[in-house]
Image (cartoon, rainbow, N blue to C red):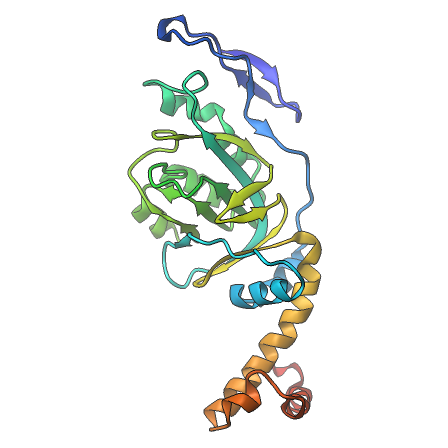
Length: 278
């Protein structure tokens, strides 16, 4: 293989012509890397960390974002929760002149799958576009361990993972559509690009967007709207605490969920009395 330079100045591989296979390989530099982007600051992440995926989804809907729930990926283990900045990885359909053959698994080390792991920063959530593939094991135990060691907070995979038992033992929060024994490019997909927009479970995720994921699933929060979501969600979460208390005391559902103008006033008085206890 010969070397070329990506836009970030990192050496990448140019796939050569392979006369033995009868395929002429195009001279294309892989992996593709998107433009630089900014991650959310620690304060924003900490504030969003108090918001459930259900509340984030509801508040985004109220703000005009209709599609934020990543449908399909489920937590590898119940109770997982993560909030972090999206680091994106895009798989694309395989084409035999670009990646095929017995050496394919070794070719992966020159792809976006390896490069994206070197781009990990503490608190990142790796968001992987894999079209819900049932056969591509996008990440396995070794890569998950490396991701975690570099400070990665969790993964949302619109596709499958391999070595699920070992990944579960790591305690790394992972959401995926299932498991498979296949390695990443063993089937119909190939790791193509990173730091690019991705489509996961019917939702657009831009690099640097915020990911909120828990037992209800992952939600993508546009980075520029994080403060609005937090402000709206904090009030919502607090009045739900109040409503649960009143309902547990025997109050009528229609009076406290959602709050009426009268019970809203009661809530405000209750919240004021609580002070910093919330």
